[in-house]
Image (cartoon, rainbow, N blue to C red; front, side, top):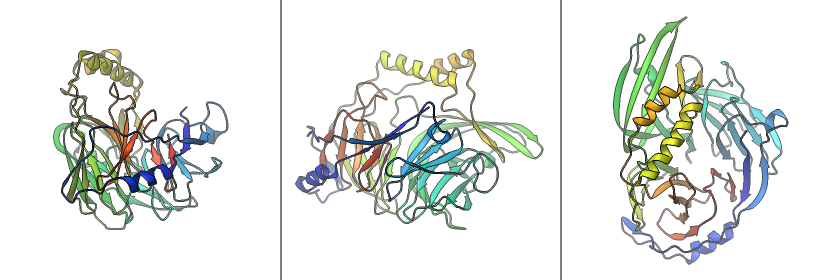
Length: 399
Protein backbone atom coordinates (compact mmCIF):
# COMPACT_ATOMS: atom_id res chain seq x y z
CA UNK A 1 0.00 0.00 0.00
CA UNK A 2 1.20 3.48 -0.81
CA UNK A 3 -0.03 6.61 0.94
CA UNK A 4 -0.04 10.20 -0.32
CA UNK A 5 0.53 13.27 1.81
CA UNK A 6 -0.70 16.67 0.64
CA UNK A 7 0.98 19.76 2.05
CA UNK A 8 0.62 23.50 1.54
CA UNK A 9 3.77 25.32 0.41
CA UNK A 10 3.77 28.99 1.53
CA UNK A 11 3.79 30.96 -1.72
CA UNK A 12 4.34 34.28 0.09
CA UNK A 13 7.95 33.38 0.81
CA UNK A 14 8.54 32.55 -2.82
CA UNK A 15 6.84 35.72 -4.01
CA UNK A 16 9.07 37.82 -1.77
CA UNK A 17 12.12 36.01 -3.07
CA UNK A 18 10.99 36.66 -6.62
CA UNK A 19 10.75 40.39 -6.04
CA UNK A 20 14.13 40.54 -4.34
CA UNK A 21 15.91 38.45 -6.98
CA UNK A 22 18.17 40.22 -9.48
CA UNK A 23 16.85 40.57 -13.00
CA UNK A 24 18.01 37.97 -15.49
CA UNK A 25 20.63 39.12 -17.94
CA UNK A 26 19.61 39.46 -21.56
CA UNK A 27 21.83 36.68 -22.83
CA UNK A 28 21.57 33.03 -23.67
CA UNK A 29 23.44 31.70 -20.63
CA UNK A 30 22.45 32.66 -17.07
CA UNK A 31 24.67 31.54 -14.22
CA UNK A 32 23.23 30.88 -10.77
CA UNK A 33 25.28 31.85 -7.72
CA UNK A 34 27.69 29.20 -6.51
CA UNK A 35 26.73 29.69 -2.87
CA UNK A 36 23.27 28.54 -1.74
CA UNK A 37 20.84 30.93 -0.10
CA UNK A 38 18.51 29.16 2.31
CA UNK A 39 14.83 29.36 1.46
CA UNK A 40 12.89 28.60 4.65
CA UNK A 41 9.73 26.85 3.47
CA UNK A 42 7.88 24.79 6.02
CA UNK A 43 5.17 22.89 4.22
CA UNK A 44 2.13 22.44 6.47
CA UNK A 45 0.30 19.07 6.18
CA UNK A 46 -3.28 19.28 4.90
CA UNK A 47 -4.39 15.64 4.68
CA UNK A 48 -3.17 12.14 3.86
CA UNK A 49 -4.92 9.46 1.82
CA UNK A 50 -4.18 5.75 1.61
CA UNK A 51 -4.37 3.02 4.26
CA UNK A 52 -3.23 -0.55 4.69
CA UNK A 53 -6.77 -1.52 5.73
CA UNK A 54 -9.97 0.37 5.01
CA UNK A 55 -12.50 1.07 2.31
CA UNK A 56 -11.72 0.02 -1.23
CA UNK A 57 -10.91 3.60 -2.25
CA UNK A 58 -8.45 3.94 0.65
CA UNK A 59 -6.29 0.95 -0.33
CA UNK A 60 -3.96 1.74 -3.24
CA UNK A 61 -2.31 -1.09 -5.12
CA UNK A 62 0.39 0.86 -6.99
CA UNK A 63 0.40 4.63 -7.27
CA UNK A 64 1.86 5.50 -10.66
CA UNK A 65 0.94 9.18 -10.87
CA UNK A 66 -0.72 12.03 -8.93
CA UNK A 67 -2.04 15.36 -10.21
CA UNK A 68 -4.19 18.32 -9.18
CA UNK A 69 -6.90 20.13 -11.09
CA UNK A 70 -7.52 23.89 -10.80
CA UNK A 71 -9.90 23.38 -7.86
CA UNK A 72 -7.16 21.57 -5.87
CA UNK A 73 -8.85 18.19 -6.29
CA UNK A 74 -6.26 15.40 -6.12
CA UNK A 75 -6.19 12.66 -8.78
CA UNK A 76 -4.44 9.37 -7.99
CA UNK A 77 -3.64 6.87 -10.75
CA UNK A 78 -3.70 3.45 -9.09
CA UNK A 79 -2.12 1.47 -11.92
CA UNK A 80 -2.25 -1.83 -10.06
CA UNK A 81 -6.03 -1.61 -9.59
CA UNK A 82 -6.45 0.08 -13.02
CA UNK A 83 -8.42 3.08 -11.85
CA UNK A 84 -8.17 6.78 -11.01
CA UNK A 85 -9.35 7.99 -7.58
CA UNK A 86 -10.38 11.61 -7.00
CA UNK A 87 -10.26 13.45 -3.65
CA UNK A 88 -11.47 16.98 -2.93
CA UNK A 89 -9.36 19.76 -1.39
CA UNK A 90 -10.18 18.46 2.11
CA UNK A 91 -9.07 14.92 1.27
CA UNK A 92 -12.59 13.50 1.04
CA UNK A 93 -13.17 10.77 -1.53
CA UNK A 94 -15.19 12.07 -4.50
CA UNK A 95 -15.27 9.37 -7.16
CA UNK A 96 -13.52 6.58 -9.00
CA UNK A 97 -12.86 7.06 -12.69
CA UNK A 98 -12.49 3.97 -14.88
CA UNK A 99 -12.00 0.34 -13.97
CA UNK A 100 -10.35 -2.77 -15.37
CA UNK A 101 -11.84 -3.86 -18.68
CA UNK A 102 -11.73 -3.62 -22.43
CA UNK A 103 -14.72 -1.39 -23.01
CA UNK A 104 -15.05 2.38 -23.44
CA UNK A 105 -13.90 4.20 -20.32
CA UNK A 106 -12.20 1.08 -18.96
CA UNK A 107 -8.47 0.44 -18.58
CA UNK A 108 -6.22 -2.44 -19.57
CA UNK A 109 -2.80 -0.98 -18.69
CA UNK A 110 -3.07 2.66 -17.52
CA UNK A 111 0.35 4.24 -17.32
CA UNK A 112 0.30 8.04 -17.24
CA UNK A 113 -2.21 10.73 -16.34
CA UNK A 114 -2.65 14.49 -16.67
CA UNK A 115 -5.46 16.92 -15.84
CA UNK A 116 -5.93 19.51 -18.60
CA UNK A 117 -6.73 23.18 -18.02
CA UNK A 118 -10.43 22.66 -18.77
CA UNK A 119 -10.68 19.84 -16.21
CA UNK A 120 -10.49 17.00 -18.73
CA UNK A 121 -8.65 13.95 -17.40
CA UNK A 122 -6.33 12.22 -19.90
CA UNK A 123 -5.04 8.71 -19.11
CA UNK A 124 -2.54 6.92 -21.35
CA UNK A 125 -3.45 3.23 -21.63
CA UNK A 126 -0.88 0.86 -23.15
CA UNK A 127 -3.43 -1.94 -23.41
CA UNK A 128 -5.86 0.13 -25.48
CA UNK A 129 -2.97 1.96 -27.22
CA UNK A 130 -4.81 5.22 -26.69
CA UNK A 131 -5.52 8.15 -24.40
CA UNK A 132 -8.83 7.82 -22.55
CA UNK A 133 -10.46 11.20 -21.92
CA UNK A 134 -12.94 11.92 -19.12
CA UNK A 135 -14.93 15.06 -18.24
CA UNK A 136 -14.35 16.87 -14.95
CA UNK A 137 -17.33 15.00 -13.44
CA UNK A 138 -15.85 11.62 -14.38
CA UNK A 139 -17.94 10.95 -17.49
CA UNK A 140 -16.12 9.08 -20.26
CA UNK A 141 -15.75 11.29 -23.33
CA UNK A 142 -13.72 9.49 -25.98
CA UNK A 143 -10.44 7.74 -26.74
CA UNK A 144 -7.66 9.12 -28.92
CA UNK A 145 -5.30 6.49 -30.39
CA UNK A 146 -1.55 6.84 -29.95
CA UNK A 147 0.35 7.91 -33.04
CA UNK A 148 1.04 4.82 -35.14
CA UNK A 149 4.76 4.63 -34.50
CA UNK A 150 4.94 5.91 -30.90
CA UNK A 151 3.82 5.01 -27.40
CA UNK A 152 4.47 6.64 -24.00
CA UNK A 153 7.65 5.35 -22.35
CA UNK A 154 7.08 6.35 -18.70
CA UNK A 155 4.35 7.40 -16.31
CA UNK A 156 5.49 11.01 -16.88
CA UNK A 157 2.73 12.95 -18.61
CA UNK A 158 1.99 16.67 -18.36
CA UNK A 159 -0.81 18.94 -19.52
CA UNK A 160 0.04 21.45 -22.22
CA UNK A 161 -1.41 24.97 -21.68
CA UNK A 162 -2.82 24.96 -25.23
CA UNK A 163 -4.55 21.62 -24.72
CA UNK A 164 -3.39 18.04 -25.01
CA UNK A 165 -0.52 16.35 -23.21
CA UNK A 166 3.27 16.22 -23.36
CA UNK A 167 5.50 13.23 -22.65
CA UNK A 168 8.52 11.17 -23.74
CA UNK A 169 7.88 8.28 -26.14
CA UNK A 170 9.39 5.13 -27.62
CA UNK A 171 8.72 3.34 -30.91
CA UNK A 172 5.57 1.22 -30.63
CA UNK A 173 6.17 -2.58 -30.65
CA UNK A 174 3.31 -3.16 -33.09
CA UNK A 175 5.20 -1.19 -35.71
CA UNK A 176 8.40 -3.16 -35.17
CA UNK A 177 7.42 -6.82 -34.97
CA UNK A 178 5.37 -8.88 -37.39
CA UNK A 179 4.73 -12.59 -37.58
CA UNK A 180 6.21 -13.32 -34.16
CA UNK A 181 9.68 -12.21 -35.27
CA UNK A 182 12.27 -10.85 -32.85
CA UNK A 183 14.70 -8.02 -33.38
CA UNK A 184 16.99 -5.55 -31.68
CA UNK A 185 17.32 -1.87 -32.46
CA UNK A 186 19.44 0.94 -31.04
CA UNK A 187 17.81 4.34 -30.58
CA UNK A 188 19.96 7.46 -30.34
CA UNK A 189 17.49 9.80 -28.66
CA UNK A 190 14.35 10.10 -26.58
CA UNK A 191 11.70 12.27 -28.26
CA UNK A 192 9.30 14.40 -26.20
CA UNK A 193 6.03 14.91 -28.07
CA UNK A 194 3.02 17.19 -27.69
CA UNK A 195 -0.15 15.17 -28.36
CA UNK A 196 -2.96 17.63 -29.07
CA UNK A 197 -5.65 14.97 -28.61
CA UNK A 198 -7.71 16.43 -31.45
CA UNK A 199 -9.08 14.04 -34.04
CA UNK A 200 -6.60 13.67 -36.89
CA UNK A 201 -3.98 15.95 -35.29
CA UNK A 202 -0.43 14.60 -35.48
CA UNK A 203 1.91 14.86 -32.47
CA UNK A 204 4.40 17.74 -32.46
CA UNK A 205 8.00 16.83 -31.70
CA UNK A 206 9.22 19.35 -29.12
CA UNK A 207 12.63 17.97 -28.16
CA UNK A 208 15.02 15.08 -28.74
CA UNK A 209 17.18 14.23 -25.74
CA UNK A 210 20.42 12.53 -26.82
CA UNK A 211 20.20 9.17 -25.08
CA UNK A 212 21.17 5.76 -26.42
CA UNK A 213 18.69 2.94 -25.81
CA UNK A 214 18.66 -0.61 -27.12
CA UNK A 215 15.23 -2.07 -27.69
CA UNK A 216 14.99 -5.85 -27.77
CA UNK A 217 11.63 -7.26 -28.71
CA UNK A 218 10.42 -10.82 -29.06
CA UNK A 219 7.08 -12.04 -30.33
CA UNK A 220 5.50 -15.30 -29.24
CA UNK A 221 3.35 -15.58 -32.31
CA UNK A 222 -0.39 -15.04 -32.38
CA UNK A 223 -3.34 -16.85 -30.89
CA UNK A 224 -6.88 -15.96 -31.80
CA UNK A 225 -5.69 -12.90 -33.67
CA UNK A 226 -3.70 -11.57 -30.72
CA UNK A 227 0.07 -11.28 -30.75
CA UNK A 228 2.12 -11.10 -27.56
CA UNK A 229 5.21 -8.91 -27.71
CA UNK A 230 7.78 -8.75 -24.93
CA UNK A 231 9.85 -5.59 -24.97
CA UNK A 232 13.00 -4.97 -22.97
CA UNK A 233 14.68 -1.58 -23.01
CA UNK A 234 18.36 -1.29 -22.15
CA UNK A 235 19.15 2.31 -21.46
CA UNK A 236 22.31 4.33 -20.96
CA UNK A 237 24.79 3.13 -18.32
CA UNK A 238 23.68 3.38 -14.70
CA UNK A 239 24.28 6.86 -13.23
CA UNK A 240 23.88 8.45 -16.65
CA UNK A 241 22.01 11.76 -16.31
CA UNK A 242 18.24 11.22 -16.24
CA UNK A 243 15.95 13.03 -18.64
CA UNK A 244 14.13 15.52 -16.39
CA UNK A 245 11.64 17.98 -17.88
CA UNK A 246 8.64 20.16 -17.20
CA UNK A 247 6.12 22.24 -19.17
CA UNK A 248 6.03 26.01 -18.63
CA UNK A 249 2.95 28.22 -18.63
CA UNK A 250 3.65 29.66 -22.10
CA UNK A 251 3.90 26.22 -23.68
CA UNK A 252 7.69 26.13 -23.50
CA UNK A 253 9.70 23.54 -21.63
CA UNK A 254 12.63 23.17 -19.27
CA UNK A 255 14.87 20.13 -19.78
CA UNK A 256 17.88 18.65 -17.99
CA UNK A 257 19.80 15.75 -19.53
CA UNK A 258 23.55 16.35 -18.98
CA UNK A 259 25.89 15.34 -16.12
CA UNK A 260 26.49 18.94 -15.03
CA UNK A 261 24.03 21.49 -13.67
CA UNK A 262 22.43 22.85 -16.85
CA UNK A 263 18.78 23.66 -17.44
CA UNK A 264 17.79 24.12 -21.07
CA UNK A 265 14.79 26.44 -21.45
CA UNK A 266 12.86 25.96 -24.71
CA UNK A 267 10.18 28.14 -26.30
CA UNK A 268 6.78 26.81 -27.37
CA UNK A 269 8.27 25.60 -30.65
CA UNK A 270 11.01 23.58 -28.94
CA UNK A 271 13.81 26.05 -29.72
CA UNK A 272 16.37 26.68 -26.94
CA UNK A 273 16.21 30.26 -25.67
CA UNK A 274 18.24 30.07 -22.46
CA UNK A 275 20.69 27.93 -20.53
CA UNK A 276 20.59 28.20 -16.73
CA UNK A 277 23.76 26.86 -15.12
CA UNK A 278 25.20 26.53 -11.64
CA UNK A 279 28.93 25.98 -11.06
CA UNK A 280 29.13 22.52 -9.50
CA UNK A 281 31.73 19.79 -9.55
CA UNK A 282 30.29 16.36 -10.31
CA UNK A 283 31.77 13.54 -8.26
CA UNK A 284 33.21 10.34 -9.61
CA UNK A 285 31.38 7.04 -9.20
CA UNK A 286 32.90 4.85 -6.48
CA UNK A 287 32.93 1.09 -5.96
CA UNK A 288 30.48 1.62 -3.10
CA UNK A 289 28.11 3.45 -5.45
CA UNK A 290 28.21 0.60 -7.92
CA UNK A 291 27.61 -2.12 -5.31
CA UNK A 292 24.74 -0.22 -3.69
CA UNK A 293 23.04 0.18 -7.06
CA UNK A 294 23.58 -3.48 -7.96
CA UNK A 295 21.75 -4.50 -4.79
CA UNK A 296 18.90 -2.08 -5.47
CA UNK A 297 18.50 -3.44 -9.01
CA UNK A 298 18.72 -7.00 -7.70
CA UNK A 299 15.70 -6.39 -5.49
CA UNK A 300 13.81 -4.68 -8.31
CA UNK A 301 14.38 -7.59 -10.68
CA UNK A 302 13.35 -10.17 -8.07
CA UNK A 303 10.05 -8.42 -7.37
CA UNK A 304 9.32 -7.46 -10.98
CA UNK A 305 9.19 -3.75 -10.12
CA UNK A 306 9.70 -1.56 -13.17
CA UNK A 307 9.33 -4.44 -15.64
CA UNK A 308 6.51 -4.30 -18.17
CA UNK A 309 5.07 -6.97 -20.45
CA UNK A 310 2.99 -5.42 -23.22
CA UNK A 311 0.42 -7.40 -25.19
CA UNK A 312 -0.23 -5.71 -28.50
CA UNK A 313 -3.95 -5.75 -29.18
CA UNK A 314 -4.65 -6.95 -25.65
CA UNK A 315 -3.94 -6.15 -22.00
CA UNK A 316 -0.62 -5.06 -20.60
CA UNK A 317 0.68 -6.34 -17.29
CA UNK A 318 3.60 -5.96 -14.98
CA UNK A 319 6.41 -8.47 -15.10
CA UNK A 320 6.27 -11.18 -12.45
CA UNK A 321 9.97 -11.05 -11.67
CA UNK A 322 12.95 -13.10 -12.81
CA UNK A 323 14.63 -16.17 -11.44
CA UNK A 324 17.67 -15.59 -9.23
CA UNK A 325 19.95 -16.92 -11.96
CA UNK A 326 18.55 -14.44 -14.47
CA UNK A 327 18.76 -11.65 -11.91
CA UNK A 328 22.43 -12.28 -11.24
CA UNK A 329 23.09 -12.35 -14.98
CA UNK A 330 21.39 -8.97 -15.31
CA UNK A 331 23.27 -7.48 -12.35
CA UNK A 332 26.66 -8.75 -13.57
CA UNK A 333 26.02 -7.14 -16.94
CA UNK A 334 25.32 -3.68 -15.51
CA UNK A 335 27.41 -0.85 -16.94
CA UNK A 336 28.14 2.37 -15.09
CA UNK A 337 28.86 5.95 -16.05
CA UNK A 338 32.00 7.58 -14.68
CA UNK A 339 30.35 10.41 -12.71
CA UNK A 340 27.21 11.02 -10.65
CA UNK A 341 24.96 13.64 -12.32
CA UNK A 342 24.45 16.94 -10.51
CA UNK A 343 20.65 16.92 -11.07
CA UNK A 344 18.39 13.99 -10.33
CA UNK A 345 14.97 15.55 -10.94
CA UNK A 346 12.90 18.69 -11.50
CA UNK A 347 9.29 19.90 -11.32
CA UNK A 348 7.49 23.03 -12.47
CA UNK A 349 4.99 24.46 -9.97
CA UNK A 350 1.70 26.21 -10.67
CA UNK A 351 3.38 29.62 -10.95
CA UNK A 352 5.97 28.38 -13.47
CA UNK A 353 8.86 28.20 -11.01
CA UNK A 354 11.33 25.38 -11.53
CA UNK A 355 12.24 23.15 -8.58
CA UNK A 356 15.58 21.48 -9.28
CA UNK A 357 16.59 18.60 -7.03
CA UNK A 358 20.34 18.14 -6.85
CA UNK A 359 21.76 14.69 -6.18
CA UNK A 360 22.07 13.85 -2.50
CA UNK A 361 24.99 12.16 -0.78
CA UNK A 362 23.96 8.91 -2.48
CA UNK A 363 22.18 8.49 -5.80
CA UNK A 364 18.42 8.37 -5.28
CA UNK A 365 18.49 10.03 -1.86
CA UNK A 366 16.80 13.45 -1.50
CA UNK A 367 19.13 16.38 -2.09
CA UNK A 368 18.93 20.18 -1.88
CA UNK A 369 16.23 21.74 -4.06
CA UNK A 370 17.00 24.98 -5.92
CA UNK A 371 13.99 27.13 -6.86
CA UNK A 372 14.55 29.25 -9.97
CA UNK A 373 12.46 30.98 -12.61
CA UNK A 374 12.53 30.22 -16.32
CA UNK A 375 14.36 33.54 -16.78
CA UNK A 376 17.14 32.28 -14.53
CA UNK A 377 16.32 34.20 -11.34
CA UNK A 378 17.51 32.28 -8.30
CA UNK A 379 14.96 32.32 -5.44
CA UNK A 380 16.81 30.11 -2.97
CA UNK A 381 17.49 26.54 -1.92
CA UNK A 382 15.21 24.30 0.13
CA UNK A 383 16.73 21.56 2.29
CA UNK A 384 15.23 18.78 4.38
CA UNK A 385 12.25 18.22 2.07
CA UNK A 386 11.59 15.79 -0.74
CA UNK A 387 10.80 16.98 -4.25
CA UNK A 388 6.98 17.04 -4.58
CA UNK A 389 5.37 14.63 -7.03
CA UNK A 390 2.76 17.21 -8.07
CA UNK A 391 1.93 20.89 -7.51
CA UNK A 392 -1.43 22.64 -7.52
CA UNK A 393 -1.96 26.16 -8.83
CA UNK A 394 -2.69 27.44 -5.30
CA UNK A 395 0.51 26.13 -3.76
CA UNK A 396 -0.35 22.63 -2.62
CA UNK A 397 2.06 19.76 -3.15
CA UNK A 398 1.53 16.00 -3.13
CA UNK A 399 4.21 13.58 -1.96
